[in-house]
Image (cartoon, rainbow, N blue to C red; front, side, top):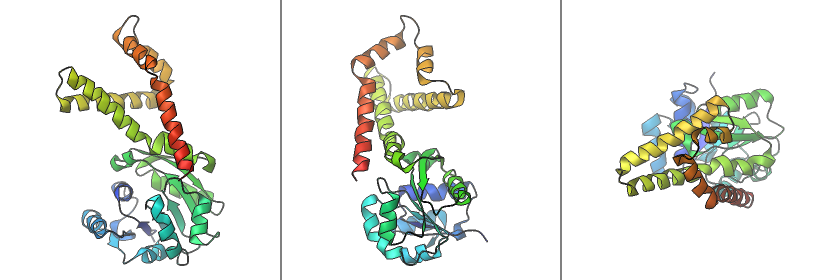
Length: 267
């Protein structure tokens, strides 16, 4: 029998998860059940993906073999006490809430006998190119963790990290798409200033980022080495690099990620 996957919260990230699972044929719509307190989100999920919509959170929690908590961190304190008593002991619980520890989840559920996985995906999951950090409590077996990683792999690259590094995952992965979008927008603005149509400027800028990331991942080369390969002596690229260094480009990024990490620790 195929496992029942339940989702509490049916927003953008839940939509990405469902879409990835269905696209990779890792689940059938009939085996996915979800609930969101916003009726519009429920209607959209049912119409677009044909999943079952539950009457409330407790129905999802009681039915699921794999339960995904896809609500915002500030909503968890409201949801967890409602579902703790109905979750079966062998159900694997996956939380995607930033900054909320395994201990927080266990205390909110009122149980320490449950299998709890904490993860941090990012919005590129919407196009099945996300990145997800994962950690779990001692109740989760290796086989179950492998199943979780396979599930998360439907929409992202998933890696196990110690829980103490989960806030770092937030800074460098969970929140970082915003930094990248700002970088793309800034490059495009410069191109528009120089006369290029905006749509074309966005296409050039975005493709440059996509291609550069793919080159790094596929070659395995150090980013500094790849940067040096573009910088011809006395050329245009090294001139641009000089300006970025003068403006504190790398230090600004490091400071931003550090601030994000600290915020995650204090949510």
